[in-house]
Image 1 (cartoon, rainbow, N blue to C red):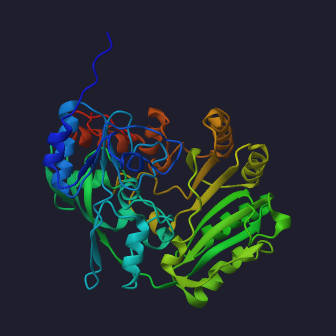
Image 2: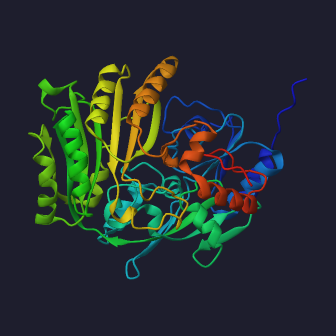
Image 3: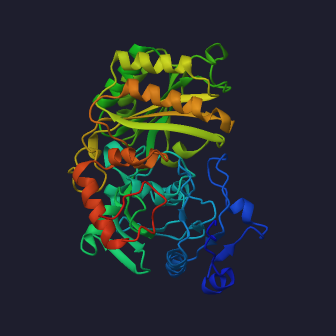
Length: 456
């Protein structure tokens, strides 16, 4: 006999929460169950749109007692679709959006439902920022607990390097403060270890002064020499300059010359947080690699980098890794991969790290890749689910051709790829320490819909 699936008392849960509970019979259910990738189409038994940490504890308790799968969602950008569940409970943090900025102390308390764009715009009113990622609609919670890397990383470090404290609801329903002095092992674990240890409901971040930057988009024709030259120039640049470069076929955007549509380009987003003449001189070596097809580098407010997000993809396949370098054969492999791709959009993204990221001790946080200079990210976006195997094979093959150094991955960009990939995100002693902490805070693995670390 097929076992009867567990059920929950929705009426009782509704009465226990200050927030709202949606089920398949409710009019807002279909909109609430959607996540960033449109092709992920799951139907949870209930969606709890929580209002506070007490609500969060109640929902965790229901999931623990019923045995139903628990999905925790902030911005819903998980590439594996971990922000939703088929038949489980979704703990939706999107209503928790309070932000308290203390400009004098240069700190901020932010609830977990905020997006990076909302936070960045609010902080910019004070001439400040917290280093987040590069996309405004991403939730601060998932980005932070994975590590968080973006336009300020080389100057100010990862998001977790600017995290001062957090309010965490644990698997047994306790609401605890985690910082350097309180629950220090939990604080270590949530800085890179993902959602394995509890639900972070509030973050206290450090704010850094960032007013006007020199930044924007630079598009260059892609040749092996331009790709390797770009990486070398980005590595040699001052810490104030961070770059995120995508090697791809030029899309038919109106500002891209028509004769270059469909041809390989390096489409880079740059940010120099020093501004002014220093920014122009730092960007100059990149501009000199080839005649730019598009040069939108100019002084701008920092939040301007987060404007103009593209359309949401329906399906996507990703392969993430750290590499020790991009040489000419690797650059040629990237270009050959573009020629072989059949997806409507295929890209190899290159993020040059170093700087402040590398100056934090390797074991200071659960992010375990401080010494790796470059992160590469191979991705294909497509429309039909039946094409998935083809595009996954393409991404895997290209990633294999780029790999050098010890296998390693960034958990925030890893899909549902199995235990070996989790080990690559958390190698050696990092995984073992995380497993011990998991056993302390979540011995029954309630928080298992993630890059999962089973309790030791």
